[in-house]
Image (tube, rainbow, N blue to C red; front, top):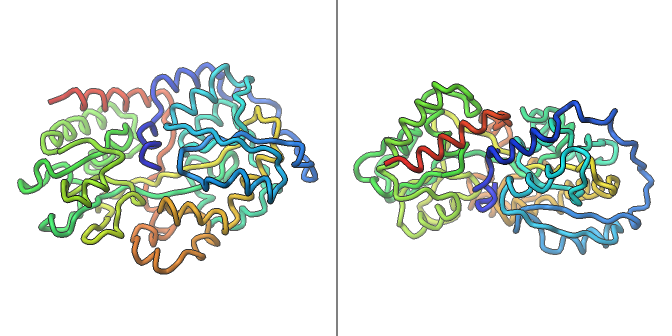
Length: 368
């Protein structure tokens, strides 16, 4: 849920139109390709698309050294929409040139429904055993049939303990703050996360497609807008550190709790469970190497890099068990357990109804 990435973490009408053109389940082949567990990986190469800064810079060199894959190209996408446009251009039978893509869970779900993903061949990924049992219970892909989770987390309130008189406990502390916090608050502008606080306060699902639910959320969000300093998906942590703001809607890993007087909490009304995943494209001509890469990333010595460097939890028990206790002590969100995460509502693909969230965010942005 890296900040710059997250600015495009909702399926826009553009992406939906692209997916509609893919033909959905009707275009699927008769089943998964037969893969060779003894394939010579030195004869395969990989192109991987991922958000900048979301993997070790030397990953290609390490993969070549440890797996023998002769060339691994890293392509960066800034948003989910950007990579979705590349993967869906031309329909289900086209070759995007990408072998492995990192996308958020609801986007993996949409790509699978469009027939663009190779099913996960668990026999080629023995390191799946390192995942928490809870990582196989994700609503968008129960059993990890077409995706493998890379990072996961939730959304909540990030705040300065010295600037907020009473510790926040509710999304209403963000939407209807006391006078002393006026213009000292930021919220997210990304569509599904813009709507989240209002939906949860009203007792509605983060995946609702009800016009009535979204209209009620719109009213709350327009009323809250007058109290905001800004909508901010990327620099809210810096603003809090500098004292420019006192309270922010935030993804857990990007709340700088290692800084003095900054804490994170999940409101009493509940929140979400977001997941970033690894998927193998059906069009890939290097599927054995693609699965070998996923397996390699699930090695705890590799996977823990994400928790150590981008401060997002990884759904890999073996990797999390290796984290330095000092890092855990300094970053409270890293200490959240899988059971605590699964209390959040998984964000799933809502199909064409995503246009309703686009319209909601557009109206709130234009409102006064």
